[in-house]
Image 1 (cartoon, rainbow over the protein chains, first blue to last red):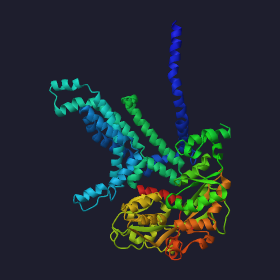
Image 2 (image 1 turned 90 degrees about the vertical axis):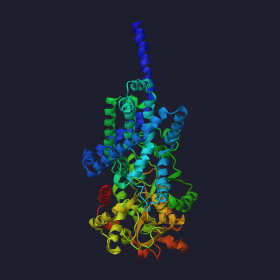
Image 3 (image 1 turned 90 degrees about the horizontal axis):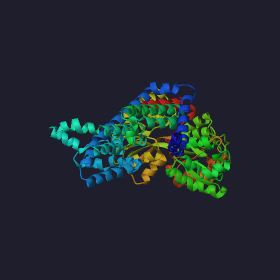
Image 4 (image 1 turned 180 degrees about the vertical axis):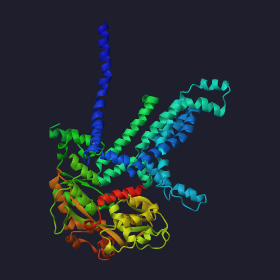
Length: 282
Length: 349
């Protein structure tokens, strides 16, 4: 009897793996194999050895671009947090109807192709666009340069990535037990102190989730910084593309991609040990 | 997996579109090299888009299909990296493409283009068949640049001609322009003084708001007034002018490049590809193509079919050619590849 049960549970335990088979096969063919190819290219092109990695880790251009990539991702994450937190708070504490309305607006923006949103910013911030027009209508003589600057690319990336932050924080805020706030108030906590000691710690998981997602996605951004940014502030993905397109440096480009992937995995690894990756998806 | 029919017919009914994703490498490993032998009645050509494509379709592609029955499909954007990757993976996205003077030397050295024969006398250079000449010219917005600039020295003169600038992100074309701005005469340019060119570029760097990388982009920023002065391909300039933008240009110190048709090494569509290159550089089709897109035809036999009315916009016309200079890749003054790498570091610094 016992043996039968154990065999039965063994069979049941096989099922999830069987169901995973198509996905695993797909990932193997379209992800693992090409990735292995990229790793291979990074140590064999143009000659066998680690010279590509040496160049990426010591060359001034690459260091500069990597530093800039992390800095940009950091700035974008902070901006998303400052924009997203109040909005998520508003959604969590307004009427259900209003919350739905805000959610609808955010998801509409979220579902619009990021290429379209990038071009929309080109029109909005352009030399003859509405923003410049407004600035001039307010009486400023000098036309500021908005497009092709760090400002324009950061703005567009915040716009594109903010929904990830908002959704994560909102989902945590929604689940906060109201009685905790009430009991804190009954103990005399008010205003800033209530927020700092009770509310903020309770929403911290949402902040951590949102920040990791935004930061990691931002690290690999390609189109937006290339189209809207200045050439002095290149990001890693743009440089990888340029290395391959302009110099046919498949090895060097691959090494850069692997370094970027490695750093991303390290960040996710730290996050996993601290919070658990499964939390990322709610 | 080893049955060619299975791969070409059932799994990959449209190999090109299927391969356009990131899946290219994986599919290549799985299906190579049989995928590439699919439809031999279709020739795939790498397209520059815009006015180039319009002229090529009307004068080269459609007449070629009418004559040979071989259908032509275009693939864009033009990518040197893809040309190289194709040969490496054996998966061909296009069979024929055009390259400029700088790239063709590199392509021929790298062995990624097929050996060709000259279809007309003097028509072959580094295994590319000379097709047409195009120019990088100085253009500006007439609404913001009131005085008429005359030379690249004026482009550098941000006091007299204030406003945003743009140049192509392409060292081989930008360096000669910098030297002209520094006072070097057109006939003394080559071999280039690379150090002097970079020193001159330092002066303009802060004023270059966009280093454009695609033809359509250069037209857009000029037309929309994102910049006030630009070094732009002449065809792309006229596109902005014809769209009604307040712009002007000069042929003075225009930089002429030659474009060459090349065939991707070992492409399965070899016969059709070679046939097309011969067709595209023969007198009448080339004359039609050059007349419509305002390129200079490089096969002399084409000239008798080019109407007088097309001349003013052609860089090689008797009136414009003396004002311009030609890129001299055989006496360039350095390894263009190394200079490009240095240019890139310079850009980011």
